[in-house]
Length: 425
RNA sequence: GGAGAGGUGGCCGAGCGGUCGAAGGCGCUCCCCUGCUAAGGGAGUAAACCGGGAGACCGGUUUCGAGGGUUCGAAUCCCUCCCUCUCCGCCA
Image (tube, rainbow, N blue to C red):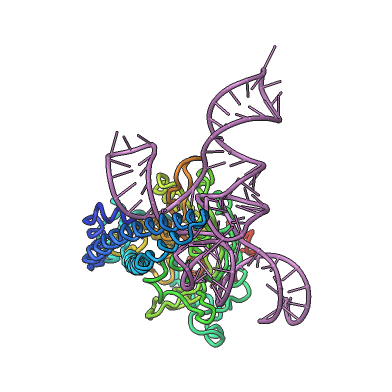
């Protein structure tokens, strides 16, 4: 959610941002400003009426205490029309507020000036490729073949028990999963993150706070009976942790890591995108979240990005860093990087992390604030998050990258203390 | 799930339908006093929104878990919901 003041003062910038993000309903801004003007006019009227009503009421109180009941009664008789007027104005203001809030939710965040303007994925900027793609003297297999050969993942039974996209991890596969979670959490801990284990379900208010509602409703599973959503990412519960709170200035920055499963409906995906571990309805992820002073958020974005990259460096997995263009970055972000790991068996890049600075966009919705100094007024924080990392595609890349000619799979050294084995044969 | 109790400012805790944004205490900030420390004295100490001003600020409205209602007037009375605590049931 953007600041109304910003929209009032720079409607042009907002329209431009909307166009850059591929949202062409720029007339939305005009509607919003129109509603805002009406709202303020009505609010002033309402407050004047209330002021008069308060004055009269306290006069009645004074008269009653003085025993002048008949004079008081005369005043009481006069309040009828005023009361009606207040009621009407109240309803009008409430309706306008609601309308305004709804419109405000439809206006996306403004991209940072460093973000390339573009329409689609094709306009993203590949900034750097880190690590060497492996060379094989045999034909490398895709991970689903390897996983099946070694009995690491059971897709079919997952489909039987829950549905497509809900695999079983079995034996060393399950162990590998657990090892990666611990490895990622430990790396985050070393980098100064506080570990948190959040609820795996969220209420609608939380989903709105981080921007999954109202515009990305189809992303999430729903539990209508209890009005809950299984989390699509730990970002939601972790960031909402501070919803409606005013933090001490010296409590910033807050850096939190959290392991959770994530559930996503992934409606409309098909083909090679969903093969094997490429796209699942349930997957594990370690998430990194920063809550920072507004002046620090772009520095924090780079730190967060490095923290998200570290596991891949330590695992010896080649990856590339992509700066998302305006059209591909999403509604709530001001700037976003994607990290893509190299899938040696599929010969393609797989997104394993997306690292975003939301500036105050989420904080404003959630009312997460901090007090810069003891007596100062609260200000909105900036929030950021990034995966560190999403597991399935890392598992895919690991299996494919470290497969040997004899069909065995090596475990990178950094991970061996966690797996307790150094090879899958 | 059943029965009961309760939700007040950063915290604890009063509160009669009108003079309550709310006593008192703690904490915090500033000042005074005291050769350090401790103790003491004084002042201050919420947020959002609307309007005014270049601005430090000024005026107003709203907010005592949330939302409705009664009333000229609600922290105080009524209804609904949420949350917390105690007991019972159920259970990892």
